[in-house]
Amino acid sequence: MPIGILTDNLMVVLGGFAGSILGARLSEKTKLNMNQLFAFISMAIGISLIVKVSALGAMALSLVGGFIIGNALKLEQHVNSFFSRLSIKLTKKSAPSAQYMAMFSTLLVLCCCSGTGWFGSINEGLTGDSSTILCKAILDFFTVAIFATVLGRFTALIAIPQAVIFLTLFACAKIIMPLVSVTMMQDFSAVGGVISLIIGFRILKLVEVEVINILPALLLVFPISQFWQWMLLHL
Image 1 (cartoon, rainbow, N blue to C red):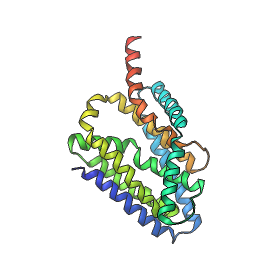
Image 2 (tube, rainbow, N blue to C red):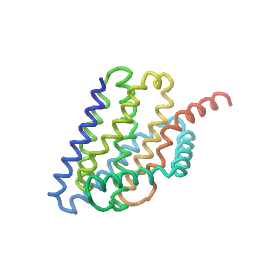
Image 3 (cartoon, rainbow, N blue to C red):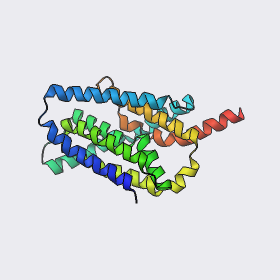
Image 4 (cartoon, one colour):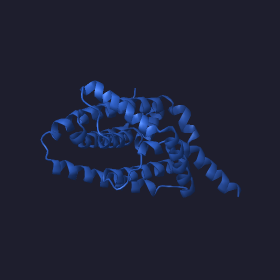
């Protein structure tokens, strides 16, 4: 039973509603300060993950390759378009602004594509230990709540793709984990760290990188890391 994953999904939903209620009572200055604070937290998380890298070359190749694939497929455009249409249907309002969707896609990445979430889901599926994903659930509650003060309760919908991704990893854990080495996980964490760092800069509006377009790097890093280690051993 994926107790940790279901708890995380619940915390995302509760965070979305709690933040939307709280947001109505906060001043614009307070909301701005909270966003800036979260940007620095995201950047700090990114730096802490990047230092775990095993092979800088593998990390760099994964990021470049992932961005090329994501950009060619226009992943962020398709994701934003889907949730924009969903927002119109559910709220009966006009399409959200580009800035709104940029913040929403940033939150989507944080909740659904973090190294902690992926590892925690696999670990719970393999060993039954839900401690990692439960820790993430606490962080996700506050993360979603902070964003929901600006984005509203629509953020609670992020629990849906999060559940799909995490439950898939949970179900496939016994197949995936034996194929993943410590080195591969270190490089995976580093790629996730770079994405978190970019998210921080994006929240501060210092860069306009489409974060979702980089996400294929999280899958590419496993074979690239493995090949990189093989190459170092045979050169």
